[in-house]
Length: 120
Image 1 (tube, helix red, strand yellow):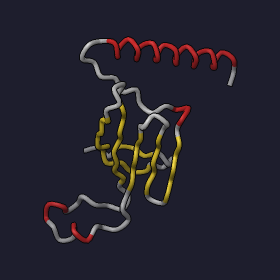
Image 2 (cartoon, helix red, strand yellow; image 1 turned 45 degrees about the horizontal axis):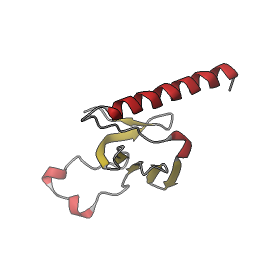
Image 3 (spheres, one colour; image 1 turned 135 degrees about the horizontal axis):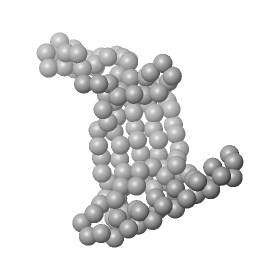
Image 4 (tube, one colour; image 1 turned 90 degrees about the vertical axis):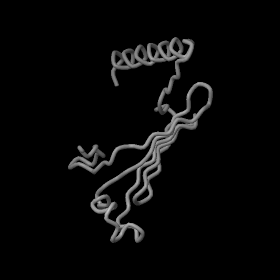
């Protein structure tokens, strides 16, 4: 990486840190900073990918290659399962240590190996 690119990254990081600090000082504002890229650990075990950082933030995505037995023959579950579909959740901690969890949209793996959202 060139010296200019490193300087630009440093400026971006400093600006982001400054913005997050200013936002967290505002009354009633909750800041979710996201995963810390310098502390990330990625685990990939067959059909489960977990990305965690040392701050307690994590993203988990997984898929099932076989339709769950409890879904078979159920009208409300028809079309929900497919072996190419990935689903998951994200948990982020705010500055007070509270956990915020959200369900990720259904995704598939594109031709380049990236998980991309399935349009609804």
